Length: 270
View (spheres, rainbow, N blue to C red):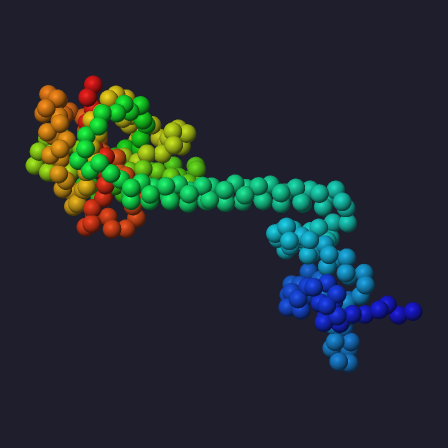
């Protein structure tokens, strides 16, 4: 008895696999029709090929690559199949971790955006204790753009260890220029989670000291800011500023220099 043959349309109706997919599998040699009519060129599949279609479909639903599927089909051994599947499992775990990081980072960015929108107390001075923090630091001995670009380069190296966008920017300010409204930077720093900071060359780290800080929210436009409320508070409390930092609020990507950005300026008190 001749083996029953199935045209591509019949196979598609039985399996739910589209004709285009079957043609693609044929083209790349993953699953070729078993018989081609020499007279009319019609291509036929046979019953025993349906199990291969099941294997391919199952593997594709697991996002297994064509090359790995080809190896599974050619293996002829469950042990070899298990090895190939476990390799794919490790790859899938890596991708899962990556996408979990993406989801977390987007959530973090949304929180940063809310911080910008909800920032209040512009010009209000509060005293808060801040723990010691390690930051990626570039001083202002060079041209501003030069040290900023060097910081970005080091930042990229740090991000490579985390694959995360989570970071914060800040500055060490020249306290002598505050009275004239100058937001003049002695240096710039980037804050990461402390675990990430452990991967950075110590030569490019600095520690922001722990202590009580007088904190005041200000708006910075083109390196100018109104420090008056903070300076008045310092004068009333007989404090001479000697160490001043400024942490940017949130992570702003647009409307930056010309429209201004919020910073919390912090003067070390002890």
